[in-house]
Image (cartoon, rainbow, N blue to C red; front, side, top):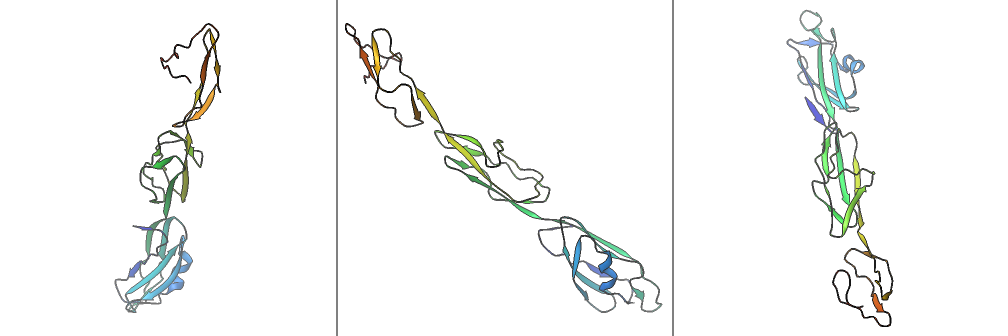
Length: 212
């Protein structure tokens, strides 16, 4: 059996015959990884229910020791019992996108202790590139495994830049800034190819004839 999150567990003890002398003091000393929130007799002699609050993830155990209850008719000790349940917490995985991109995949994700999240890609916009997550992971797509705590991370993106370099061949010079660093999608500044005396500008090495 399993419970998830801070939920309480309500095991029921049923004796095969009417018994006496069974109360919470029989159970409390043997609780493992839990506390007893309530102890209720359902029908006086046969059935009891508990309300147990797990203390941490893992196995939660309620023991009913030998001799905890006595036969109503013979006063003989009734048989013991052991009840186990495993508690899992729910954790939240949250993935955010910084400037220049988006998140593809499920966010937030709810994942139980020890389980894995699902893959989440960080998708850059045009002119951007994925750099890393805020916890310095560079996995992309990213899958968080064996989850034991909440997680919030942000994908970081960088704007692409390019270098524009203008050189002059024999017979001229360049007027303007060279080299230029220009953001992706932006414009460089004007550059003029200036012909020396007795020379004329023909074109650029990429066959453009724009000047400037």
